[in-house]
Image 1: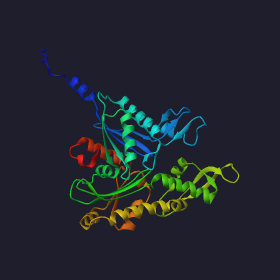
Image 2: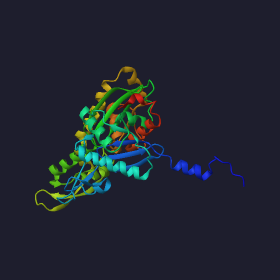
Image 3: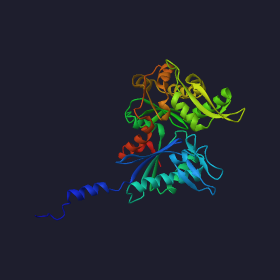
Amino acid sequence: MTMVLGAPSALARKQTRFWRPATDIAVDLGTANTLVLVRGKGVVLNEPSVAAVGPAGEVVGVGLAAKRMLGRTPAAIRAVRPLKEGVIADFQIAEQLLRRFMEMVLHRHVFRVKPTVVVCVPSCITEVERRAVRDAARSAGVKRLFMVSEPIAAAIGAGLPIDQPIGNIVVDIGGGTTDVAVTTMNGVIADASIRVAGDALDQAIVQYLRKHYNLLIGEPTAELVKISIGSAVPFEQEITMPVKGRDLISGLPRTVTVDSAAIREAMREGLQRILEAVRKALELTPPELANDILEHGVVLTGGGALIRGLDTLLNYETGLPVRVDPDPLTAVVRGTGLILEDLDRWRDVLTT
């Protein structure tokens, strides 16, 4: 058998492809969840943005394991969410959280050099908050860091032609912020950002049950109620579910039955503020772009887009066609992954 020197075997070529170093990653550092995408691999990490902190301030657990501890930890351990309303509230814990997530990704994939990272940030972020994100990423071992506005990344992930002279509008409802942006030619023409989103709706449910049912529940339970029976418009037939908590009068555990109409009332104010943000962005939109939006409609992304009937409510209030992205939870990180595929093309939407 004759072997040609220098020609790699099929096995060697396969191993070369498998061990090719991944040097570009995208991070959606969200208030509720953190998603990490590796270029060429897709989304490799999707974990709650929660850290379990020990008595000395050290992080003893992150992600889903830490989220299960919310409201259930002894005095020596506390489960915390270092990001509030879309930005870093506790820098030291956020830094450790991001480093842990990066280590999880680095452990699964071969990084022979420090990676280039694109991080999504809310459009309302301040320079101080931007610096906190930058410092946390660099402490986690990043070579080059870029930032992109979340609504821009969401629009790209949803397949909107934002680099064309066409008006597009995206509404990204995350855990801490709702970002609305009208885009064209890789720029934002009109936008609105409010710190009312999924977490605020959960807190509204907590307060409603406390006031009307004398029942104290935690935010994880409120989130479960929102997902299970929450809606933006009435159901044809209202649904109910049992909710367990602590009775504020007797102090004993108690179960009450709550219907979807009550939860809709609890979320009404928060949903109205989201609608007002959409109206504000539309009022600032130039007429020619408004014509495009009237034709192409509104795209909803983020976890809040999954609230039942939100697209129907938005259509009723604005008269515009509304569609929900097929996978709204990953729209932002998918868009960031597309940016990683061609940094030169999307350089105008990035900041350093």
